[in-house]
Structures are given as C-alpha cells and as structure tokens.
Image (cartoon, rainbow, N blue to C red):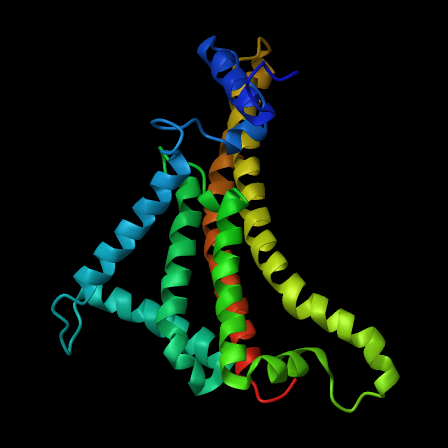
Length: 273
C-alpha cells in the first residue's frame, strides 16, 4: 500500500492497521507492528518507557535485595545472589578465569537487563521487546565493544594491542597480506555486528511468530466457515505454546550475549593472540 503524504512506510502501516482494527476487520502483521505509536509527543515512545521501566525494576530489585544483607539470606537476597553467582561462575570465570570476577557486576546487570527486556515480549500490555528493534541491540553491543577495545588498549598499549589482534605468530610473512584483513574483519567488525544482529533477529522473529499465530487465530475465528472457526483453536494453542518457547529464547539470548561479551573481553586480557 503506498504511504500517505507526510508518513513513512512504517508509520503508514501502523495507521492502516489501526484503521482496520477500528473497523473490526482482522489484519495481517506488518513492519508497522514493530513501530508502536508514540505515547506522548515525538520523544515519549513505548520502547523508551519499557527501557526505563526495566532500569527502575532492576534498581528496586537489587536495592531491596541488599538493603539489609544477612548471613542467612532471605528470599529476595537469595535470588539476587543466585543471579550474581550464575554470571560470575558460569560466564565470567568460564571465559576469563579469575580475572573475570571484577567484570561480574557489569555482566550481571547486562544479563538482567537483556533478559528482562526480552521477557517484555510476552507481558500483557507490553507484548514486544525493545530488542526486536535494531537500535537497542546496537547500543548494547556498542557498550560491550567499547569496553572490549578499551581494556585491550589499556593493558597492552595501542600498537601492541593491534599487533596482538591482527598478527598471528608463527605464520610465514607473505600470509599476513591475507590474514591481517581477515583478522581485522573478525575482531573489529564482525564481533559487534553479529552481537547486535543475533539478539535483534531472535527477538524480531519471536515477536513476528507470536503475531502470526495470534492474529491468524482471530482471522480464522472471523471466517464464515465453521470448520475454519473451529481450527482457530489450534492457532491460539500454538500462540500460547510459542509464548512459553519465547521465554526460553529470551533467557538464552541474554546468556549468549553476555557470554560472548565476556569472551571478547577475555581476548583483550589474554597475553597472546
């Protein structure tokens, strides 16, 4: 459908969807579903509210957990300590050894934030993850990328760090004409790009699948064919099943993102290539 004057294609899809829903006619998912209308003015968006909500919830959770820490932890303190212990022992230490313990607080916050914003995709009233919009994974990947570069340069110096990252020891010198560009792409381009795209693509696909089954169920339910109306139950059942599957994907993607971040930081801390 051609975009209306003054509206982008995505905004036009959103407006079209709202008009069709207002008329009671089911409509298929489109790119407009990933651009929720602004809540108030051009700067207050649904995604922005969800990000600040996630930040507020995490601050409140950890403040409550460690407000009055005890030797025998209460329930909230136990949850917080278990989360921190999971990231410290199974991610930071696994990827960086004992040197990774000092990065455990950052990695714990990163894991908690990504997991929580991913889970927003199945929360009624929110029903979309900010990470299904590429801008947010790019920012998260950029933060990890800057940290990865800063730690490497601070440890070895710029020249030594570049040499360690680009030159493979023990390789005949003519091979470096081929290997240095490959190492540059792998270490300085592919890592941040794949870190962001992996998170974005999984959350985008998850939201789209939920839309397809949910809206598909309403489309079949609105059909004049009784058989099609009955089979809409299977579409709704698949939507519920995929929502549970989305929980697993949301947590797994948070774990993968943080594990790769720790791995990249570990390569900056390593003494050789």
